[in-house]
Image 1 (cartoon, rainbow, N blue to C red):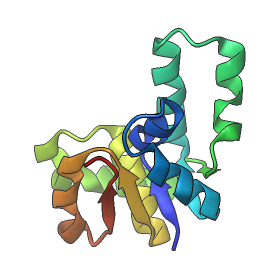
Image 2: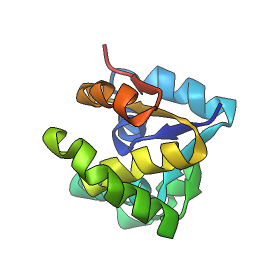
Image 3: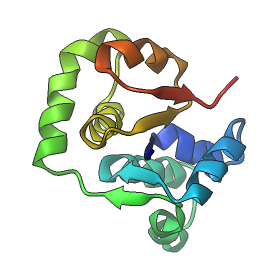
Amino acid sequence: MNHVLDASAVLAWILKEPGSERVRELMESGNCLLSGVNAAEVVAKLADKDRPAAALRQVVAHIGAECIPFDAAQATEAGLLRPLTRHLGLSLGDRACLALARLRGAAVITTDRPWLQLAQPLGLSIECIRP
């Protein structure tokens, strides 16, 4: 089964935060996907930490996940998720992750525990890597 990584999960791996081992394990399996929107979020968060631009240009290539362009199908699905996720305050990036997982029949990997509430309503397998 494929796994769609949320930006928070990728950042946990890069910054060696709790749960990073699980992300590394999944990436080594070769079955991980990352929405282009979430890839941009990862780079932006690292840029906020004053990481050098030259290094940031290489980040996405070194993530053990296939970066999937944000296309019309994902955009539509992410938009349709808004009413179902508004109560949790999910961002466009969050919904892009969930949309990609729905379209690909994949599990979601995140650090955002509140997302677990969405598993049943959205028909998704959602794993929070944080204890």
